Length: 117
Image 1: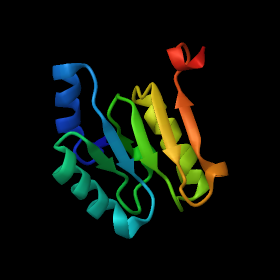
Image 2: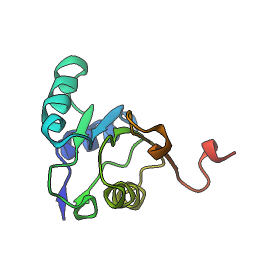
Image 3: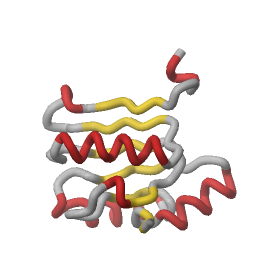
Image 4: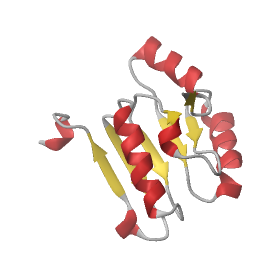
């Protein structure tokens, strides 16, 4: 299975510190790479990943850390597939935010996580 972009450096950060502060860009396909690269330039490596255009989220391996994701404009089936893939790969807490339609935003919480209390 292929890994999400920058997966190895994020995994190394998790191994070294126990977590990573990651933004996942899955919104407008034309802006995914520029936004991920801008975050890495401003905040540092191991801080961003993205869903490449035309790729099924379930076909990628995702970092096992909390994420804040921009899903603005991502089709509903892809949003659900992304949630499923993140949970499958160990993401215990995720905020998937649609900045154009807040009703589409999702909080992903693993069973037993303190945020469930």
